[in-house]
Image 1 (tube, rainbow, N blue to C red):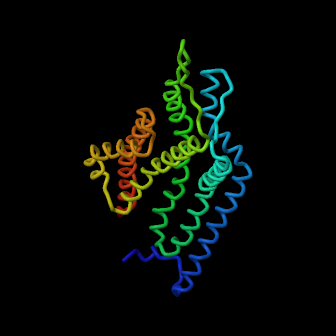
Image 2: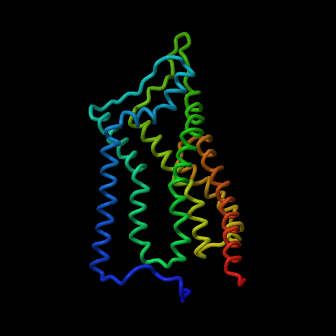
Image 3: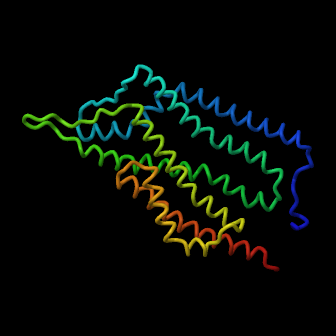
Length: 263
């Protein structure tokens, strides 16, 4: 039994009212996504410029000449802008529909459960943004320099090897990397939350450290391009975040034990 003051701040509701509440939250989440999509489509060219900036800057630094990206299908550029708008809408609306999910679930939780979960919900968008920013500002420039190092000028009787990137393929790769790093950086949030609810323990995480490290390198090899820079660029931060999760989980457990101890 929970403590007497640890109650559920909700009133009993029939199943139909729960379903109506779920429908309302889903409609609000979908509406927020649609509004975000419209805004992002209006600014899709600016979003495209932001995503293409790392490649454009490196090409300008290395060659000093204007370069381009191409599309080979008549409809490809249009669908690329739709994809950019969809990606932007998912990034922007994520906190909104996560809030709607929380507002649907929260009334059925005890106050202690709300206090335990709420900080992790607040931390989630910050960790996701940190992962995407780390990828955009550090990993992508290093990976692009590595790939572009294989360009070669034409010698006597030779043809040059020069990048002619397809806009759809390039943006798909960048968006996939940003999503992958963003979600990967949510790992400590999930691990610490599981420690808080008793699914795993810090000691168990420490004992399984070697398997976790191998798993992180495997995950990095699957979701990143086939180059060492981006794979190591994802695996190493994950290892550091794993170790930080163990430390934070121990500190939170000590704090809970100190608060539960009789004064």
